[in-house]
Length: 74
Image 1 (tube, rainbow, N blue to C red):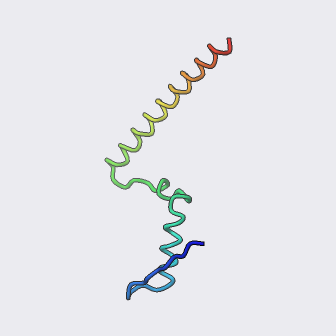
Image 2 (image 1 turned 120 degrees about the vertical axis):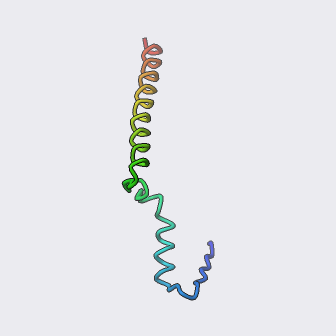
Image 3 (image 1 turned 180 degrees about the vertical axis):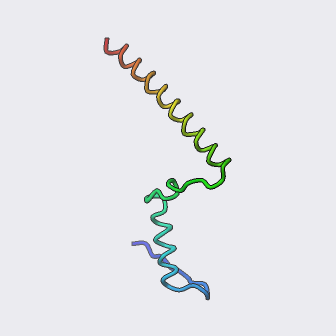
């Protein structure tokens, strides 16, 4: 069993450390970082363009895969 030792800074409480530890362990699992909206217009534009490009690329890839599967099945 692993042992974890947490050393608090003088201004930190056990509750603060617990909150930060839970946040660190669950940050990627809860997906919150992906649900935040971009506040800067430039970042929002880049995100929207990226999503459009990703969707187009993904659709093209699926069409190509389906075409190969159809050719193999026939």
